Image (tube, rainbow, N blue to C red; front, top):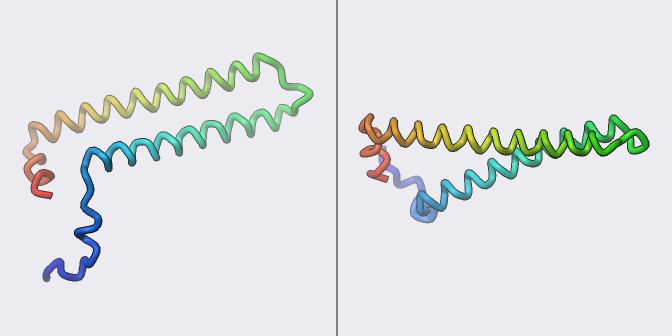
Length: 97
């Protein structure tokens, strides 16, 4: 079986670094959206009349912890994946593109 039925295959070829950056940025946007949604949902449950400065500070701290933790996990997994592909021989398969 050939790959002739992939009509758009030449159009899909993009720079790998660009793909990684765009994919990572979209994941970050999704994570920020989820965290902000849950934070504002909690604010709605508290109600505006009962909302105090410490609630806002806790929401901001939660956002920073989740964003920082997600970034840290992404960096660690990036290094682990890079290390594994460097020494496992997988890189040759990926380079044939």
